[in-house]
Amino acid sequence: MTDALVLVRALLAGGVFCCLVAVVQFYFRVNPMEWVQAAMPGFTYNGGDTAFQDRGALVRVSGSTFHSIELAVVAAMLLPLSIWRGLYDPVGRKWVHWCGTALLVFAVASTVSRSGVLGLAVGMLTCLPFLPQGARRWLGMVFPVVLAALFLTVPGLVSTISASVTADESDPSISNRTNNYPRVAAMFEERPVFGTGPGNYIPQNAVFILDNQYLNTAVTLGIVGLLAVILYLLLPGLAAVQAARVARTESLKCLAGAIAAAGLVAGVCSLGFDSLSFPVFALVYPLFVGLGGAVWILVKREAKLLAVTDAAAQRNDLPKTDSTPRNGDI
Image (cartoon, rainbow, N blue to C red):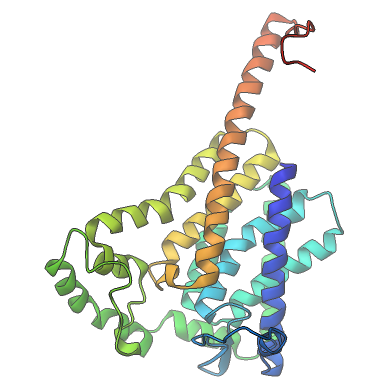
C-alpha cells in the first residue's frame, strides 16, 4: 500500500496541475500552456490541441490535455482515486488532498462535456459501494453543497450541461457520430478480420473523425483488434471490481473500488471519443492497469494471510516459525 501511494501521489499531482491550468483558462481566458511552450526551446509545436471551445453560454477548456473531452474523462478517472487518498494517505495535510479532489470535480464541470457527466456517474456509482460507511454518509451531505458552489461560481453551468445532456440528433456533435455509422459498417464489411491496418484511416476533415474508440478500432484493426481493445479497456476494471468485492481490509477494498471505477470510466467513455488517439489518456490509463494488477496481488496475499490467521485461531495456537538459518539466509 505504501508503494501504491507513491504512484498515486505522483499521478494526482499531475492531475492537480492540469486542473489548475483549466481554472486559469476558464476564468481568465488565458492558456498557461503557451508559457510552457515558450520555456521549451528546441522543441517543435505539433499543434492539434484545443484549449478553448464554445458550448452554449460557456467556453469549455482542456487544461494541459489535448481536448476538453479528454480532460473530462481523465478527471473522472482520477476522482475516485483522489477520494481514496483523502481518506487514507497519512502524508500531508488533509485539506490539501480534498482541495485536489474539488479541483477534479471543477475540471469535469468546466469541460461542459457529456462524456464527463457520464464518466462522473459511472465512476461514483462504481466506487461508492466500496467506500467506508462514514465516507458514503459524508459524500451524501457534501454533494448538494458542491452543486450549489458550482451553480454560484459558474453562472450558466447547470443550464448548459442540462441542454447538452438532453440534446437530440439536431445537435451537430451527436448527428456527426450517428451519420458515420453507415460508413463505418461499409468499411468494416470490406476488411472484417484485420481492418485497414493501424494508422491507415486518416479522416479528410473533422466530419469524418470517428468519435468512438471501438468503431475506430473496428475499421483499422478489424474484429481481432476490436476484441483486444475491448479486453484492454474493460477487463482491468471488471477484475478490480472482483478484487474489491473479495478484499477485507477497508483501505484495500476502497483502493480496488477506485481503480475499478477508473477502468470502467475509461471503457464506457471510449464510446464517446477515440480515447487511444489522445496522448494524456493513452499514457494515464496503463498506470491504472498496473495499479489494478498490484491490487489483485495484494488481495490474494491478504486472503492467504487471513486464511493462515483463521486457521491458527481455530487451533488457538499461533504458527511457529523456524528460526534456524538456512543456506542463503542472512
